[in-house]
Length: 311
Image (spheres, rainbow, N blue to C red):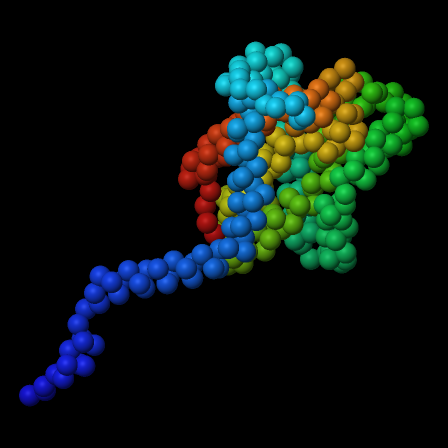
């Protein structure tokens, strides 16, 4: 018969409440140590400014004098302002116009560059180059290309007998001009994401579809797109978030004009803050935009269960 010594008894005994609490603290400190390098900048440069903006949105403030409490007055004034509704309308027009262009173009490029082509690595780099180019540079280049008088685009259209529009100088064409430039710049990003998804599709699935006699369109609709749905979901979510925050290209190409035809929400936030010294209203508008983006993202996340399939 084995006789347990006092030391063996202590080792065999279950841990006490104090021991479990001490291990819990050690595990918690370890987690905090690993999260701190990213959590501290996130709290300092994202969470704190958001809380500060929420507080400022409840005041009237011109960035110089003391803030005056107005409660939700800034929000009610913005909701009733036709300029705010127009800015949201222009932003929605941009999102609806840009995302289909960039998705269809990015998918077409991904499918083409996923095939065995000579020089495809070079082509991938060429198509991705605009993504890493400064938005101001891209906007200024497209402002010159779409210049109604001396622009290359209208010159080419004139060669085939088409009179080019006024582009960014025409209220009807100002937003399409921005959409065109944005789609050209974002095409490479969508291409890379979808190309990575295409390369992760199992080869045996493609071979099985070929053996069953599925044609190119049937393989695209029944095999490729369903298995590409996680990447498509990511691209759509990121594109919507970025689309509602469009600013750089608008500021550089049109400045919100002509006659406010391309004024978007972030441009209005900028104008309220630095042109009209209405920081409270600007903070309130930024929070309204945040709520809109949050609701749309949550709806997308909820709806992904219906159409997103893992490979």
